[in-house]
Image 1: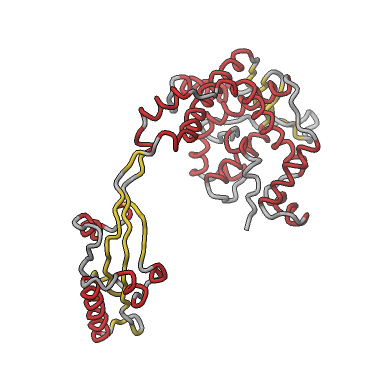
Image 2: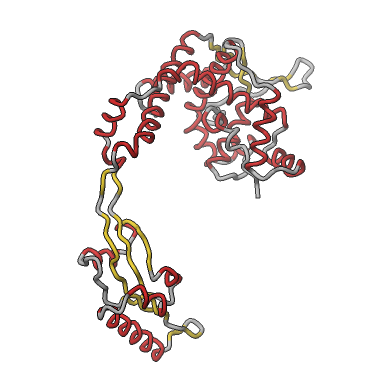
Length: 368
């Protein structure tokens, strides 16, 4: 089973990757040297002198498609022949082109601020990854790297990119993320649905199984099971104790807890059970219900009504929600400023048009 141990390291790969469209946004083919032999890497865009190449984009493209296709193996060659992949690439390319340029801008800014990853930091992060993903053995770790087509140098570069961007975010945006008490209370008042616990129901059950032979139900055994469940219901109604009866007679695993099941929301119950429970009050017992495997009765244990959680109990959650939204908004402003200050030289008009169209759509708050 493939080790997905780059979850911590692949934030950039998931957010700031830029696949290259093979159809709607076509990239130039790699150029050959004058001798006709050596392939010269195709530069797609220069951002303040730093380049983004066709190969780099294709590598990120593969990563995105693999993520979307749950690990399915894809490669740049398959982009040319698979119509489904072509469509997916055309859909995701514009935003990913923007993200790719933004990554270069953030990395450049981080380097200008003097940020870098030390050897000790890298070793510490790798050690944590190996521990969390149970890759303590060198052979297992190397196998995981090979499966991701990565070297240790690749991993270091990826981790350093992530670290630099996080440091830039803290430097440029962190001070703006403090949430005041008043802001938190305003958010709480405007979004009560986010902090409202749904109504829940807790039941007890007794289940009597009907034995089968080669998948067939014996009529006599069915009658016996039906008589048993009716007898148990009658005994429960005489205050013999539903929990005790469930423990001693139920064929369900819940017998270990006196037949207790739940709590769960009303929407988690079958329509048939919903209708029954809606008419019950705590302590009431249903009529026997025929299930595919036997007969079942329920006792309503308790009903917890919908309730708004107290502000103090969700204060931290509110801070995270507000900070998250503010981070996106402030980062968007910061990146827009970096772009206006940058020298961005596109080597392909198709890519440039897709990039500029997506920038305009993002600024308008929509996505084509």
